[in-house]
Length: 156
Image 1 (cartoon, rainbow, N blue to C red):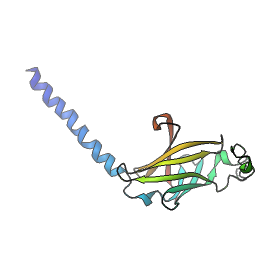
Image 2 (tube, rainbow, N blue to C red):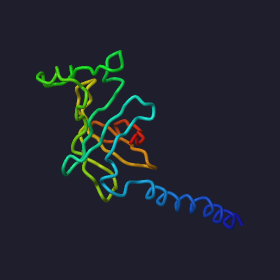
Image 3 (tube, rainbow, N blue to C red):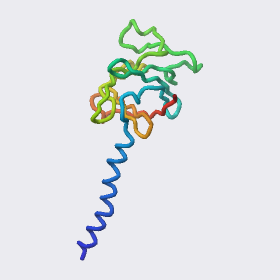
Image 4 (cartoon, rainbow, N blue to C red):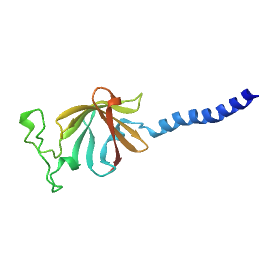
């Protein structure tokens, strides 16, 4: 008798859960490489950048960042933490800080990118996914599991 109750209960709980996951994920992901192009802004407004086609890969240039500007909120800081001494005097305005993002058609995301963090001078690996119309930018060292994800919305 207990077997009679367990099987329908298990089916009632597991089957809808299993059926909804693949469909939801598939519908939420990007379907073409060019969907990444445009201006993106962090949900809190602290970061804004432009993603563009860099000829075979995708890249991003800075438009605004709370950590990129001086206390006046307008003047861009210098790239003082850059490991290359020749670049330490350049402005952070408009620098290309993400490069080499390549479209992975199988996983429907952009992988293999490099992200420069001007606040530390370090370079990180990067990947991007579009989920539900929002960009999930994951920066990491070594493995994606050891990273941080920033969620952005399309500004234009």
